[in-house]
Length: 114
Length: 116
Image (cartoon, rainbow over all chains, first blue to last red; front, side, top):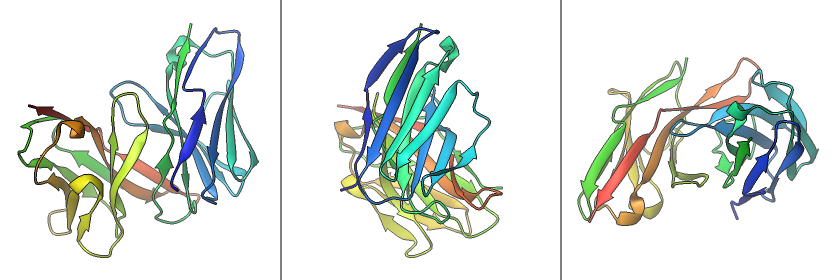
């Protein structure tokens, strides 16, 4: 099973709201990733978790706050977002963070900030 | 630095005809290369990967790619296009970041259009 699940599929939030995105994998992978994808563009890396620890933050604004409660779960907490943050947010996982392993992507959460 | 260049932003084919999506890479070490497909409003699905084993890589749904070091290319092909192949395709190279962690470097994508 190479499935990564994400909830919710769609999310509409105001600029003052607080919401969370959830990602789950049961492949025993030790690396998990958050990407942001704007329309007609490739995904952009936001965060990398390695063995449940935040390893990479690609200079993401603090209004995005990641969390890894355990090895299977990854959350992205959202607060005071801007309209330009509207995008498809993708979660991915790989067997190991430091080698040439493929990443498996979830279906994404389509976020609209009003 | 690792990078990939997808040579065509759009490719149009008729159903039943061959598909060729072109990708050139740049790498300072032996690369790991991937092709991913993204259907509208969906996540990315791994089609195939090259990690220094056989140079001709077979993937899912009849796709294959050939790694050519002399040409620094990793083109994606399929003998006969199906309507369901219409999607965005990304050529990707794996790179090590300064911290030692892997980062996927994406090409800009090629939109494949398939007409009946």
